[in-house]
Figure 1 (cartoon, rainbow, N blue to C red):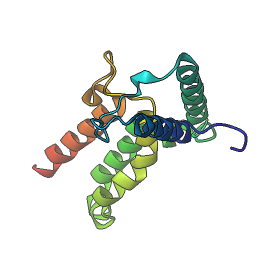
Figure 2: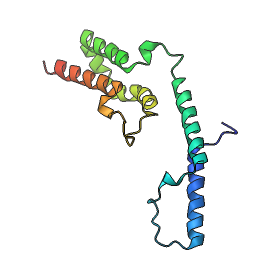
Figure 3: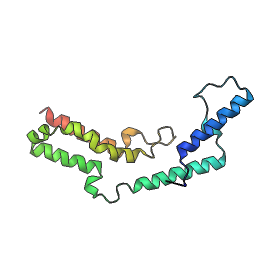
Figure 4: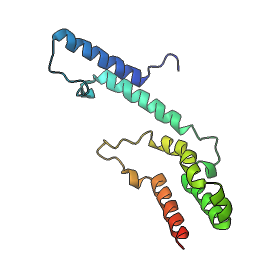
Length: 147
């Protein structure tokens, strides 16, 4: 979006500036990749948080015009489970197991936008609702396939 700072561009510029300062000061002990972004100024932290909040706000709008049955992973998987139970041959012939990852990918990615495994109180990936729904679907699929 024109006129708005991109946080990734901002961080890249900041790192470039720090590298140039190190080179001018003759700091020879620096190893690329070992820098810390903990050195951000309060203004930079505020700018980053503002950009992050904008991204999160925009992400909530991605599926706002989609019917709930088609943007809820559990509901989508339930439809596929019903299809599999009612028409197993058709389900098998459609190679659904190959299609589901591509179908669910955008929904999962939107839900992962705010997920940060490095935060102290971060939800474990296995505890997220979409992960559990997929796990339950897989268990139901394996259970019915072995009968």
